Image (cartoon, rainbow, N blue to C red; front, side):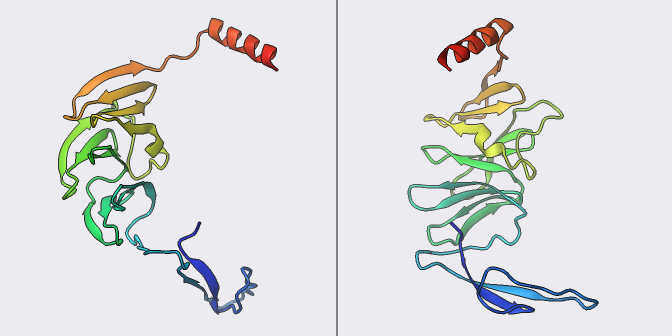
Length: 193
């Protein structure tokens, strides 16, 4: 659902229906909308410096790690900002142990959970391949954390595993199915149809 409930129009419109009829002419027309918090909202925080939210991770203690186009940030359970790391825009993930990772440009970056300071940075993509950053709005689903703070991600046509120290543990090519596998799969689909 939405963070706010529409309550009505101001300025060039009136009423509380969702439609507003505006007649434009030579002079500019100003139209405003008013909103209220739903009764169930605990808090709302406006991220005024953010062009895009790329990821949101809810922690067990109700804090939020948000990966945005203006950097990663940690919000307290009451919505107050604990820290912001504007030098590392991108999608963020949190491991089961609380390690915070951000895909930024061609790099995987690990942040210190208490301060947001950069602990290490590892290049995971070849030149010309961006895996994360302010324009990578679909990248959050392309990496996951493991139980030992390792990270596995899709980079171009490879799967890359990085350990908790930032070292690349391995890289594996994602192979396309062979002609024989495609033929077998097509035959199985026809049989099951």
